[in-house]
Image (cartoon, rainbow, N blue to C red; front, side, top):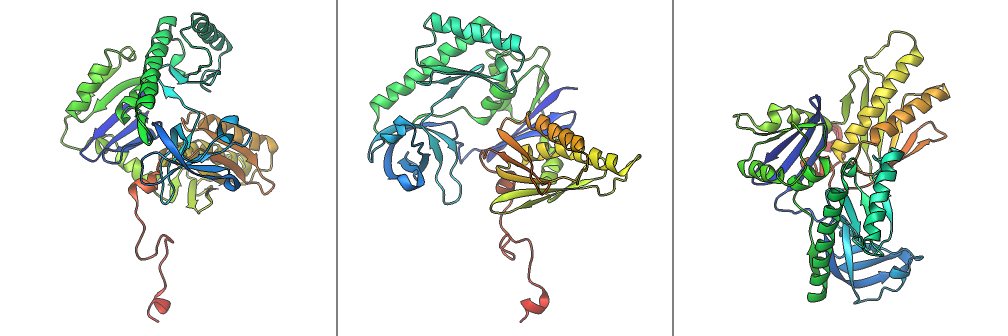
Length: 410
């Protein structure tokens, strides 16, 4: 059936759900008032350097100073001085009392390439795995270097969309990014810190640029202005052949019509049922997220070991999906149902890694600990789903429990 991109736009925010066979596979939300600054490039001023914390704090013109991690082995960061003006890129938004996190490793995304100024390195999206395609793309980049189209000292990342792209498409994308970088440098020379030099496009443009692929069959939009913008984008972007851009005009809200609201509500629950009858329990702490896998109603058809394996395999794929939808970052501990056969453990780990490979946010599966728990990490990227949709309970102050009457009345 392919995938559908469902776009809902209101006065407050833009929400984009990506459905795969009717199941919500990815979810993106952007507040129109609180603009997303991840990916933005600023000219900032060093306000404070804390060698003991391997950190510097940079004034980039926001309410809180940004945090810059200092690598003591990096010559560029070792030479930092208070009041020095530097260029930084935001990699994580401010959260709570913490300011935004920034890096001096600058990059600008295009349709096929990510340009890395002053970082002479070529790398590939993890989705580009075929050696023949890697070699073909490498030769194109080498040609661009020989022609001086790609300047000396500059690097690129070949994005997933670069697969099967032509020489001319890659060259045009590179030239566009280089022109953009020149404008950034001109602004940096003209204005003093703190100031913003570059901001990425809005959510609709980013999703069309980054997510659109041949398996996307429909793009359905409930806002006339957004619909018109996407039609205009289709004139310059290589939209999949046969894809349909449709304007949604029914009385029922678009996310309700396609069942996305119900799936978001499910992703906010502590307990998530699996199709086999098992279920997952999500528990958040300050330090990590724990996920417990249970057989629940599932009793299997052959033997207990097979029942456990099937539940764990289905759980592995659902866990990866839930992490994407909930946008959970940090340390994650998974308590799969105990398996005695080492081969079964290997199959479950392989299934988890395969499912996580579809995630656009980087994750790392460390493996089973001595206690039989799976330890993994997922990069923090923006606000989680609970942070976007939930507020703290005034009665329990976030504990999820209230005092019993016998104590409450004392």
